Image (cartoon, rainbow, N blue to C red; front, side, top):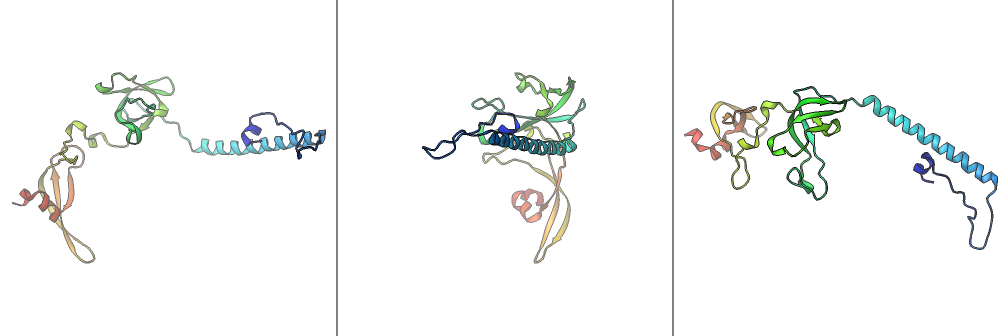
Length: 206
């Protein structure tokens, strides 16, 4: 018997003839009793292992709850052959968002504030489809504010050089510059190599 069959109560079929062709031998009460005892032992051990795994998981599982106003990500599980959220296949989306929680519905569902392009989708979801959004809201740049060129590279222009410093490596020194970028969301200041920045944006050093 498979462990699943032993655990979930499928009757054990004792072979009445388990010999070569032409030989006959019937199973007596001893083998039936032995088989029954073995099945009980298997069930007991599987139940003990199952309870041990369940208790281990229960101790480390935390109920997922959200408050009104929190930002959450929506887990996407597209059906085969149906596209609701853009791409499908290997490059299909796994999470959408972030969305604002509007209200709690019942014990395990939440109503979300969906954008107009998702107007045809019901806005109430079970908690198992939601994940906490760890990104800060001011760091998220909308797609409408992102511009790309013909090579699908993000176009972003620097505004000014704020500071310079020298980074000492093992065999050489690199001049780094602190650059302020034009976008106004998230951190708009980064350190870049001066040589690379001169090649890309020579007007900054004119």
